[in-house]
Image 1 (cartoon, one colour):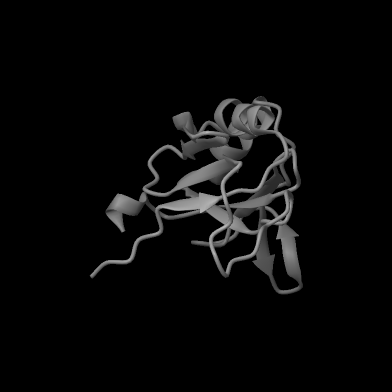
Image 2 (cartoon, helix red, strand yellow):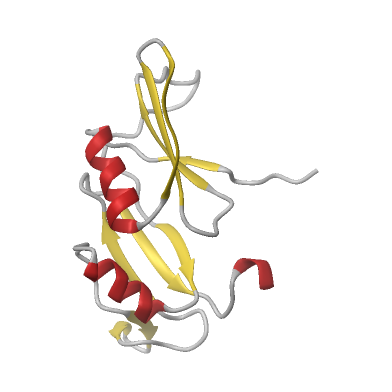
Length: 143
């Protein structure tokens, strides 16, 4: 049996602001924006080429035995791209505040590209949820 990660909930304060950020600034596709039950709104967005989506939720009851994440408490979600410099230019061009391209070197994080699987940039959404973008040597379908 396969166990696939399909949707990651991202806690936000303003659904419309977050939808605009992820769709217009980051370039995710809006798959769904619907009131799925009275008072329960779900916005599902998917990064281009990804099999995993994010979900922005409003009014969703908390499942039993789970904790609620406050907006801005989700950190380290990772997206892979095949060209970190192009990703940096695209995000910067769309007005996203991104870190410089960095890699892990002898003294920790150092500016500039590293070797295979060792080039990163990061950004935060409007609520402070943080993301990491990593350069992969090829698209997921080719690995």
